[in-house]
Image (cartoon, rainbow, N blue to C red; front, side, top):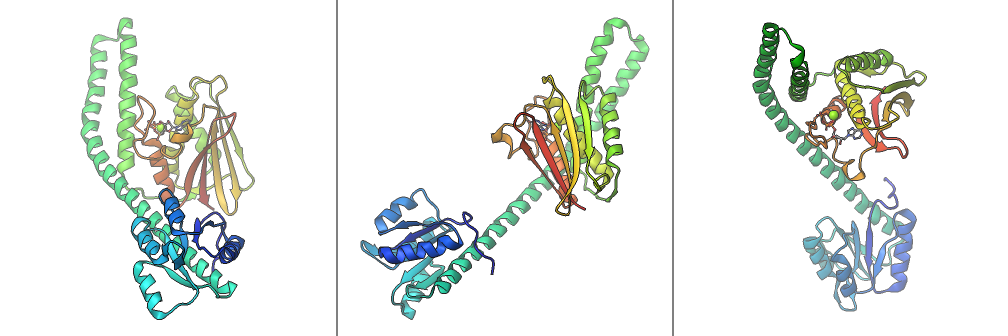
Length: 362
Ligand SMILES: Nc1ncnc2c1ncn2[C@@H]1O[C@H](COP(=O)(O)OP(=O)(O)OP(=O)(O)O)[C@@H](O)[C@H]1O
Ligand SMILES: [Mg+2]
């Protein structure tokens, strides 16, 4: 049986017998969190207006009423709270009655400590199961949302790609015809810049909507980074950015899908480059290491970092803070890692910038 861990569960005790309430709290606190204790229905109800315990122990006989009423209320107003009824003398009828009222369990006050603990652990296990179920449901919802966005993206991208290619070809023909006079050089650059931005968007959308067919093989990190760096520099990006690669021992060649990782790293480098635009020191640091059987790649920059209230949103599709961003770069990165059974996370490093951490199994 898994032992309860402190602070993971919030517990409330509603019991007027102070000695028993203290005993129960001590037993629970040794194996989990310190419960909040209330001696009557009225104060418990007041607290429950803005408080949701995971587990609520409720005495059946309270000075100002019947604990069973509180159990019934909790079942209605706090459906995620598990109530465990406390009683000095139980009959089959009272047990049936409280279970019907919505109680999860039943505890006799003269039970040995182990019995109390077992009952608490059972409730914790039920809560863990509920939490796992909610996580899975959330993941499923997210995947359905992604699938829908994928379909929409594919349609849009196909519709845009052809006219875009047409415009680019027409521009070349036009420039050939007029012979590129110097007075038009600025205009040409400006058109090409916008064309490149639109093309990036369409490529991102197409990439995002494709089913990912991940084929993992050992890839040389130095080569991978150098390839992306030269590609980005040839596009006029990474101006004044120093790239520092530090590969850990036995961590030079992770097993990954090179095609997809190229896209992923390109997106991260591009973000870092954009974030560092106004910084004096512009460094992109890439480190690799082995940690607990995982291959870890860290990508840090010397930009301003990510505001705390946005940290939880940046991997969502279409979340962007940029006037010309689509917000697909990191969503695609997360999806690529999902397909690798890996993960990507981010945090700010005080005094430096954003630090992205990628984990892959070895
Ligand atoms: N290295 C970073 N430093 C600071 N903020 C970042 C960094 N990387 C990402 N962000 C934030 O996360 C947001 C989402 O990034 P994402 O790459 O998904 O989209 P985007 O860069 O805005 O647009 P796109 O990549 O589609 O052109 C960015 O708009 C930016 O606010
Ligand atoms: Mg981006």
